[in-house]
Length: 241
Image 1 (tube, rainbow, N blue to C red):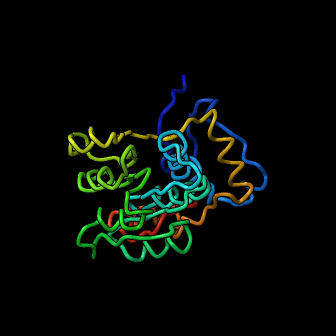
Image 2: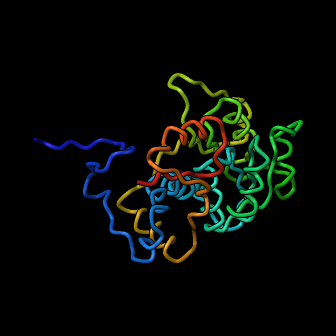
């Protein structure tokens, strides 16, 4: 029977993928075991957002709205690209502590306690001017707006988080026009070009797999999804089988 490409592997033992999306793991990376599962998703998505959409450069200030599995990896990739200020924003204090201790955040904003999230983010940038690049990794109208308003003049807001189809985000049109703020979406990375570089960065320890905080067996997969829905997973979780 003919085989057709499908975009998700899920819990399958086998998956049909295009040849250009298939890479042999360097032995140093392969030795990391099942944790390397996140390379093709969380790290791949984060790398694409930072390199191909955010164009992060040394010395930049960045903010990441959402300290989940992808957001955590956006933080560490930003640090790897030389960002000086990496500001993590989330509602969960435990996730923010993990972001600062392990994932490269230099400052955090607890949105559950902040009277003005945007003002607090901007206060953590040089001169209070705002960030060069804000990454929205939640997929929510509130954080969409906050990301745009946190950017400096001429800055960029990169939208990474997915939302339910039909969800709309609003921006202050006049502010965006006058301050020349750019809003850009980012989905994944460029497999042919970016995968070899990302694997090499992992091999050299420039980025890590430390965003993984929990592991489940295949029989516990339903529990993993429940815990994800409940916000009980810091960073990423891996289902092993």
